[in-house]
Length: 191
Image 1 (cartoon, rainbow, N blue to C red):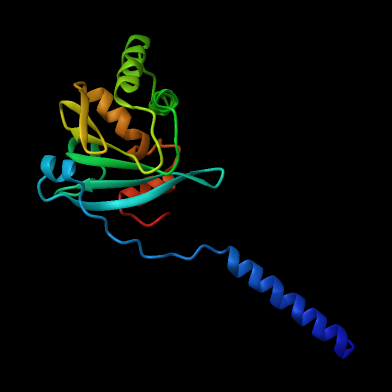
Image 2 (cartoon, helix red, strand yellow):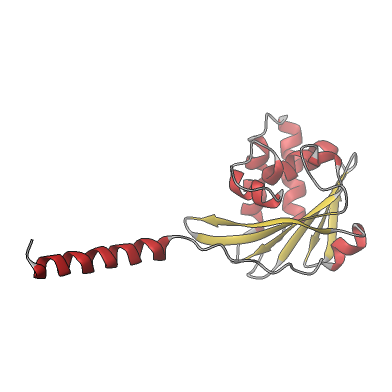
C-alpha cells in the first residue's frame, strides 16, 4: 500500500473513531436535588432513591425522581409511602397526559370499565396542562390511595388503593413500558 493511501486510511479511521466516541453517552453525575417541600412535609426523612428521564423520539419529556424514607422502595413498592416527582421539560396537554396515564395503567392488567371511566375523570381533574419546568408530584398512601401536588400545591386525592397501585405502577411495576427508567428510579443498575 502506498504511503498516501495509508495516511488517508489512517485519517478516515481516526474520523470514524471520533464520530463513534462522540455518539457514546457519557455518564455524568447528577447533583442530588433538594427534597421538595411537599415531600419533606409528607415524608419526614425522605431521601432520593433514584432518578431518570423519559425521552420520546429523543426529546426530553420529563425528569423523574423517586423519594422515600426508610425502608427504600423495592419489590413491595405499593406497600411503602413514597413520592414520585415529575418535572416537565415541555408543555403538554393535561387531558393527553391523563389519557396516556390510563392506557399505561391498563398495561398492568384489565381495569373494569366503570373504574376506568372514574379514574380517567380523576386524572383529568388532577393533572393540568403543564409547561416547561412545572412539577407534578404523586404521593403513595399505602392502603388508602394517592395524593397529588402541582408545583408543591395540593390539588387532590384518589382514595382507592387499586388506583394508586396501578398509577404508580406506570413507573414502578415490572410491566412498565419504560424498564430503564424503572431501574433508575429504584436505584438499580440497568440489567
